[in-house]
Length: 171
Image (cartoon, rainbow, N blue to C red; front, side, top):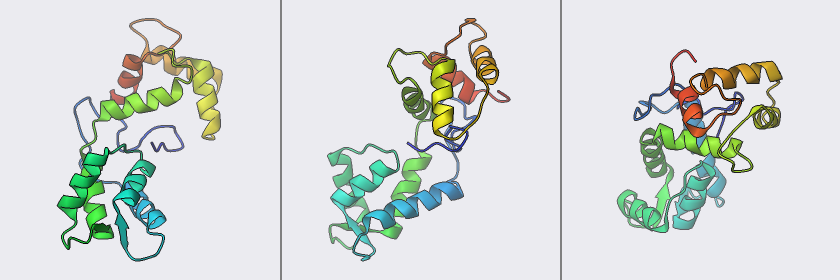
């Protein structure tokens, strides 16, 4: 799962629940190319089913073996059992554009919720911010949590607060 330096997935930032991205960002396009190139180790311009699965996982996706076989069947126009870059790019663009923003926010929340308590407070936010190179003061983080939990007046965010924070315009 990729996050930018602000700790969010830029293509999902400020999307409402149920709303999906309408285009692939240049960063996502680069990520698609890098994932393909990483697993096209022989430079043939093609990857097989196992390499496709690993490349997709590198992009934060978790395809099942059945999904991989289905993709190979649908994309492999020349019936070689492999997928070339153009075929891979088409499939990954479609996958990116069809992601559920709420499910993606849930994945990010789980990264923040290191002890699986279902809550994220200042300490956890500060640790994650530090890991990604962000220097945020405790007062900034407290303000962020207060904004997200305004109806509950809590000092820790639950998933519902996190979703609100990432899907509310002008947050």
